[in-house]
Image (cartoon, rainbow, N blue to C red; front, side):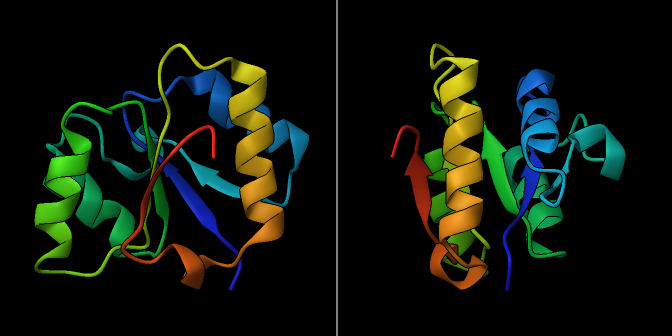
Length: 116
């Protein structure tokens, strides 16, 4: 199955728009599009897990710990963490490559940092 992404509320909007522009076939929703703004990490992880979307977040400080706690009880499609200082072009290219080169099943219960 093809990967689908969900942006955490903190993810730069330009990343989502850039990925969509670079590859229009990629399904990448923003937090406000699914009513996930203002939610805590567990609620965001659940909001991504229910429809099977990999969460993409800048929250490198608390998300890894919350992800481990979440996956100790439930399954997750995965999380990709993006350092704030990573260039926009690199982030967009990496997400597009991930979408092209892998399947959703490969990311289940995985947390990865960009760049890969």
